[in-house]
Length: 590
Image 1 (tube, rainbow, N blue to C red):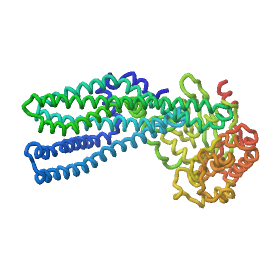
Image 2 (image 1 turned 90 degrees about the vertical axis):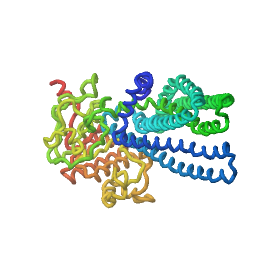
Image 3 (image 1 turned 60 degrees about the horizontal axis):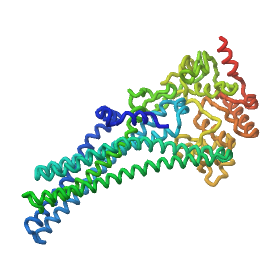
Image 4 (image 1 turned 45 degrees about the vertical axis):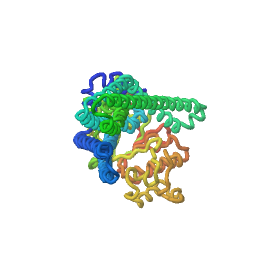
């Protein structure tokens, strides 16, 4: 399934519809600071073209000494050495200019990738949960690279080649118009024919390759993530066949792309041969002769033909990368549907970063939902309607309800991740509006059913988002002792600095939950949310965790604990039970 905008882009046709409008879209996708810097990049391209042209001109005195003045070794050598010295200096200057251009392009890639990622994060949990994570990752990493390398870098190469060709051909026309026109008569049709016949094919190749690579990445991700299920259900072969199919698609695209490249090389060889034949025929009948003029045109051909090849290759890359323009425009441009606020609970889709949490709220009395209504979109109905509930500070509250009643959704609303269609979330009578969401989230800790662990040390997993060097190791040790993990962790070869395998595969379910609790305690959370946190552990571990949470609540009467659970054993530890089925039934009857 192609990414947003890919199909419409292929159908619309970049060059066929409105080139000025499409170039305007490309320009709009590029952030403003890079547009200004792009002016200097253009100047650097012009300087490079002048240097390349000078690299041709500098050999003319050497040629003149050899062909027209019957120069001796003593007279030719100084001129040749001077030309060589200039070429070396020119090479160093070109290297600097090329580095400037490359740094511009890859800085643009970093910036765009950062903006797209922040844009997606700013749309909030509801958007992320409803999206395909591999597709989002593809747009963050691959589409932005395709745009900068395939479109912008290639476009700069086109500009550079065009400037150089214009300078050389203008100079040649002034020197000898007739052979110059003959050269253009050969190169012009080649460029037109190549672009005319391959334009649409190259566009489709770009869209197809992006789709195939994204599907290939998704297949690999699902294979690793669902390995036990695929293996047990004897579905590994079918998934591997799908992977091979994606590989074949990518391979077919690359084979076609290489074939088109080889075709351009063949065309270029034909062009070179025709140019030489025409130039020789003209030299046999014209008064200017073959020696000096032929030499000058031969020198020029050393730059003209590679420039034409570069022009064709860059144009080919731009055609293949066209799909990326619409995808980025759809994500980043305000008139393509982007909002201006990047606040998770409102689903804004700005490219701005999710704001850093300000000072915490003054939570001293209660958390409440007032006349709250929520649904997952048009046509899906309301999961909650006119819902009211209150949780007092220091309470140990359990929330129960049948599967599908909306317990996890309620958690996401209480944590400020899901926006309400009606009503509001209040903390101490303060409405948690979009600008207060991060202040509220600074107060809470969250322990889900499957605690997220990074591929890092125990210290990194507890002091989440902080570097190991800045973590309070004494505090972490105290918390590990408190949650009953210290004896095990201290016995490991590297202690707290021991690495946890990817996705926490090296720790048990009960240990995962304790690490999740340790993370919340290290943060200093005032409110702990447990979402089915003990449903995947054995009864003994469940009992230990429940007892530990009860002890936490008894030790600190200001700590608020909110638990979702199916098991009666977990709910029995709670001081109050909120029956979501009864609450929603009451609301629907009213």
